[in-house]
Amino acid sequence: MIVGERKPFEEIMEMISPHKRVLIIGCGGCVTVCLTGGEKQADTLASQIRLAAKQKGLKMEVAVDCITRQCEREFVDNLKEDPKEYDAVLSIACGAGVQFMSDVFTDVPFLPGLNTSFLGYNKEQGVWEENCRGCGDCVLAWTGGICPIARCSKSLINGACGGTDKGKCEVSKDMDCAWYLIYERLKARGKLDELRKMRAAKDWCKDRGAGVRRLVLKDMVEEEAAG
Ligand code: SF4
Ligand code: SF4
Image (cartoon, rainbow, N blue to C red; front, side):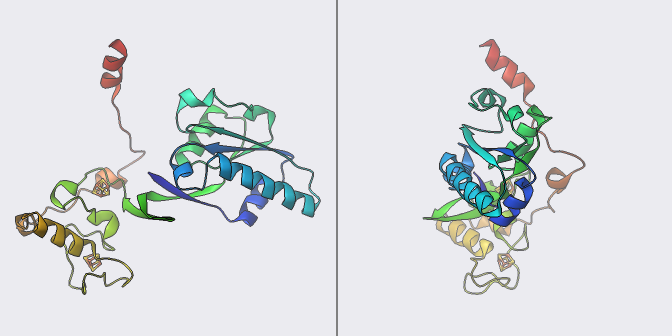
């Protein structure tokens, strides 16, 4: 899932202060799961903004809406409020959601209420951890399902480095060494041979190639539509 955290309140107020009618739109996807961008958080943020606006003597009307996902066209029609009737929209979706909505409502300023942080999962109650950088060339098949790109401080493809110490990373002792975890998992599966293979340098073009990365599955979509 995509993990995001709410921007500092002062930054949000600075963004929206010039506007008199503001619509906050929550997203029912990943950011609801990580408790930062859902309907409940949109309502809470709206109350905080109304109070702060009153204290600052700003005349500001704040409304709230929420849709299932802000990154897909089919859900945009479910908006109860019309963004075009507002001076600005504060979207608390991830960066993809904010951009998608901006592309749909090109005349309305869509402002980001979240900082989109990373791809990860819920590690324990209230803690989300990064575990994928969307590198475009997944290696999990031979790393025991543990990502060395996201979870090794040096994104090593042939780890471990010489700094691993009692299972911890030399860059931060608070962090498990990804390659130690990989070693232990492969050992438990009787697959340590995987570690004896020297892997070719990663092709980073698939990660940060020229221009925008795209996934094109037009044929598959047309096949599905045709039944
Ligand atoms: S190898 Fe790449 S695609 Fe696979 S989990 Fe790691 S960052 Fe994500
Ligand atoms: S100690 Fe482990 S996680 Fe840290 S940089 Fe070295 S191999 Fe990567």
